[in-house]
Image (cartoon, rainbow, N blue to C red; front, side, top):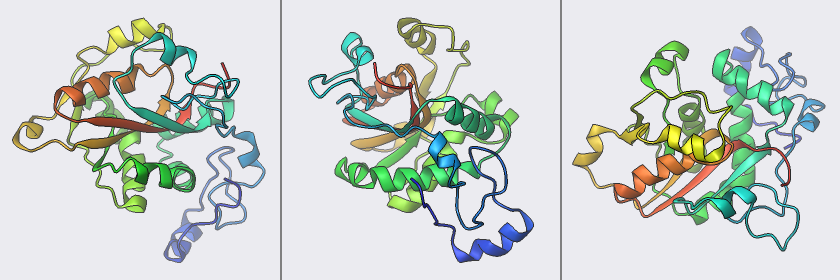
Amino acid sequence: MAGLNVIPMRRMAVNLLFPRRCPVCGEIVTPERNLICPDCVKKLSPVREPTCRRCGKEVYGDSEEYCVDCLRHKRSFESGAALLNYNEAAKKSLAAVKYKNRREYLDFYAAAMDMRFRKQAMSWRAQALIPVPVHPSRRRQRGYNQAEELAGRLSKRWGIPMDGQFLVRSRRTAPQRSLNPSERLLNLQSAFALHPSVAEREPPERVILIDDIYTTGSTVEACARVMKRAGVKEVHFLAVCIGEGRQ
């Protein structure tokens, strides 16, 4: 991820007025055309092989095909991957995206995901990128959905249409942080539904679900179940972060 230097020239004038800030330290990025400070990229923890064949979480050895969560819980999605382990630097950065309107940080994460996952995403032959939806009340409060912002950036890079009108968050749920995996999935039952317009069109056969953080997989699983019932044959996912470290 080091050396990402991908800001187009047309943004230079904008950056003079509104200098780009680093997604890790929050300070103005130097050199100015970079998306992240060279020293700050070292504070992030890229997911490294070997990884779970289902969710992409790091595992201890090549003999382990699946992580503990994927061994214990049936998955409705085919496969997935994440860019980073969810360490303190990533946690702080994504919290700023969600709660402090630092959507420009997603430029770096989208560029890094493009470099890391373009070949994998193309191999899935997805017909749509589906962002994990937020409840309308949260969207009104924030003014945006961070997963949709990320999916839009990836869509432009990969030429895969983003469909932000496929899933909706139909019910607000209790915070997931204090719940175990089974409780998380139960908490999310009936939280997602198809957008009313989906009934009037043929669903895509293969999709990539996009989210910022994958923890136990409960959110991806709940979304995958809804989409499979609608006729989607393959659900893959990509996330910025996944539960930290090897297990």
